[in-house]
Length: 181
Image (spheres, helix red, strand yellow):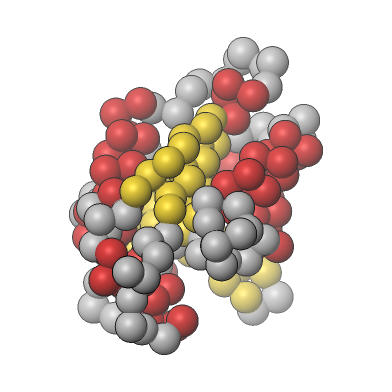
């Protein structure tokens, strides 16, 4: 199983107290879904298979969430937040009732800023009189390629952007990619 090493919240890193904190029971269920991903997902697979398999395994542990990859193997339009110039902006997993978006990252440092901005834009986009995203969650490795710590990079980006992030809260879950035996 995948090991979760660290969890951090934007609400603990900023001085703003008017926003709600990430629901602790929801955060626990997301963490549990990450921890239930079997290690074989990271072994003997191509990069594309690995990426899809990791997201799909997390989605299996969170059946109440819409999964962008769709459990049947296609694209799930319920994860689309908005469209612009013919491009659909979506998140990996989305719980529309609780307004929680999850982005699962495996390697790309540049994606962290994009994910945070996507959460912010989702907060500014209304549906039924509420923001489409009220809580965001980044799931990132602490040991990409054995040396890159995407978790630490995510916290640096979060600290840099916290003054312009008006979303209620963002959780960052740092997991360890299993290394080959």
